[in-house]
Each structure stands twice: as structure tokens, then as C-alpha cells.
Amino acid sequence: MAHADENRQQEEPTVLQTLPVSLRRRTLLSGAVAAGGLLAAPALRAQTGMSPDAALEHMMQGNRRFVAEKMTSFDEDLTILKQHTVDKQEPLAAVLSCADSRVPVELVFDQSIGHLFVTRVAGNVCTPEIIASLEYGAAVLGVVAIMVLGHSGCGAVQATIEGKAVPGQISALYAPIRPAVQQAGGTLAAATKANAQIQAGLLRTASPVLAELIGKGRLKVVAGYYDLGSGAVTLLS
Image (cartoon, rainbow, N blue to C red; front, side, top):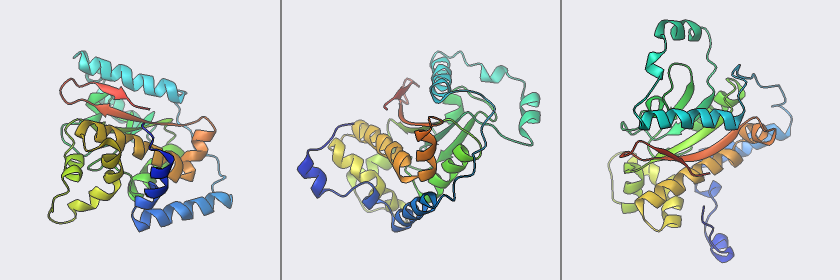
């Protein structure tokens, strides 16, 4: 990710400052709770036995099968999968994806029932609810990797670049995406990639729950970019 010079960093607000007040308050509160030792209870771990790097590689192998049109997830016995996931779930990774209908996450990574814990919101931005969901995925379900997945042709990023008046609450998406637009100079692909990286960085730093797992080597948070045309996912960080 490109870095601005020191003077610009002093002038521009931090990522935390661009968040809604409710998210900033929750972030600060979470920090206070963690500092007080109230999160000391051991997290439940998934039974996959995979390392964060192995889980990410498993996903990327699935994406390569998707691109090559040699998917294997449809060959799995759905009856057995359902039987093994009725009472519990043990996903190996989580994905924060855009809500765009052209990004079918499980298909993109050639994964079936119970393998991925997916959260979706337009622009793949962090909200209190998204962060809480991913904290649950990591601390309770035991996912060992989280990918923030941006994609080509993202309407939320394009709308932020244009900055036009929109109906309802759509413009609420502008604030968390605007730092990426400013960083990338208004280019859609560059801004989309920067946004995925910024949101991944926010997950690493704004959530004490995730930060603790990262510090212990039990979790990795990365950013990725999905190309609608080729179907390929590229890791950005």
C-alpha cells in the first residue's frame, strides 16, 4: 500500500477518525475491555488443524480450480455435508465481501457447506456489525484466516469517486471508502484495492479480539481483489 508523506499524514484524518461515531466508541470500549482482562477466556478452535497460511492457500487453490473450470466442491456429498453441519460449524476462513451479486464467494473459492464464514456489505467496509461477526468467526468458531475481498467494477467505490447525491442512506458508504479514493487518486481499480487493504488494516488494529489472535499467530487478515472478467483472486497483502 502506498504511503503518503509525513506532512500529509498529519493533515489527513486517521482511518479510525473516518469511522462512524458508534464504531469509534465500540472500538475504544473493546480496547478497554481487553485491557481489563475480560477477554482472557480461551477461544474455541476449529478442528481443521490448518495454519493461517495453509487456510489461505486452500482458498487460493480453490480459486485456481474455479478459474480453470475444474471445480470439485459440487462432487461432495451434500447429504453428508448437511449431516456434519447441522449441530455445529467449523469454517476454516472468513471473508468480508462486497454485496455485489457477481461475487459468489463460495463458488469463487470452490468451497461448499460449512467451509467459509462469509459477511457481506456493499463496498466490503467494516461496520460494528461486520467486525462483531468476524470476531465471532475468529474467537468462537475458530477461523484462522480472514480475507477482505474487493472486486473490479465495484459500484460502491465508483459512487464514492463520483460523490453524487443518492437516495436514502446509500451515501453512508462514502465515508469509509473515501480514504481509499483519496489515496488512489480516483482510479476505480486502484481505489478498490486500496479500500480492501484499508479495511483489512482496520480489522487488524481496531479489534482487540482479532489483534490478540493475530499476535499469537492464530489468525491472519489479508486483502484480496477479485477480477470479474477472469474470475481470479489476487492477494494484495
